[in-house]
Image (cartoon, rainbow, N blue to C red; front, side, top):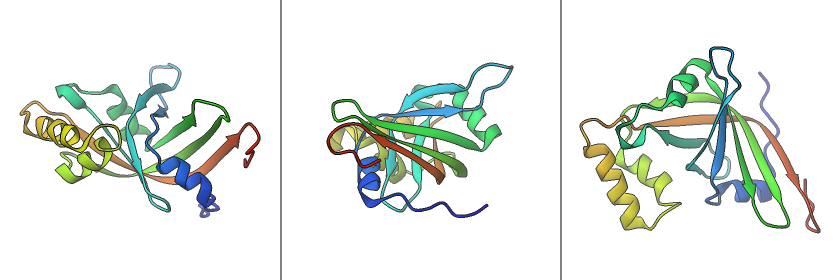
Length: 152
């Protein structure tokens, strides 16, 4: 497979902001794709990481991601001027269990640092924890913006 063109720096910065992502992965049993919101982490020119299986629950998406090996992740700006980035990517790595640093790196984007650390410690200390961190390599980017600052 050829290497995708790099995402423009402006879009990489947007993707690196703490938006809620919507993950979509091929489903099973002739059902439509499984689509769920989640927290994620991204740094420009890097891979995307996210976790599943919090609160001791086995997440359906975990099995589907492992089986499919590919996902789509969409991040959007919800106010005008609207824009979005969709990442189509390949599963590179599964960390089961993840390190505290991996989980904190994701969680602190969405909550204060103390809360992110408490959340992480609670998940990792729980003997029933099923938390998993997935690492996805971006293979293809789709972008669009609407409004005066149209860059897509």
